[in-house]
Image (cartoon, rainbow, N blue to C red; front, side):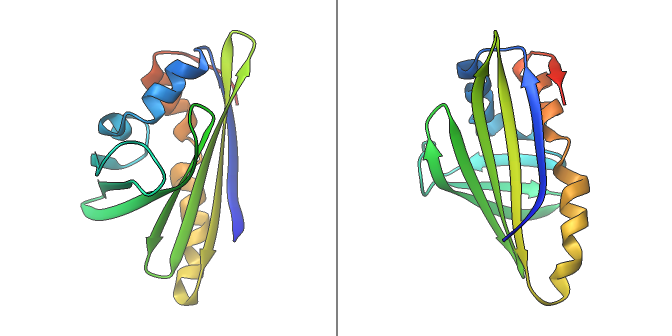
Length: 139
């Protein structure tokens, strides 16, 4: 896999508050660009599938790695694109440093999508900060 982008944002809320919003899948559309109708098929654990709609099309992501309150990896497979989105939370002063790394592998004509993924999702941590009710403190 190739890293499509890495984003960092310090949010002026405690890690447990950020984690709660990050894993409140019914609210995913408030901070994931273009996502509507997100529904989890069970508790937040390895193997859980998140079903959601983006730009009118149904998609799925699955949790493939989880360290509760610290990190999770969502994997999406669509056509010739596999994308792993890793979210890491680290206490930082009175707030939380959130890091998002998107690793992507593509095949065939899908290799053109790398830049699209970067543009579409690189700003989601600022939206996550707003959804938590905190202000983004840094980029």
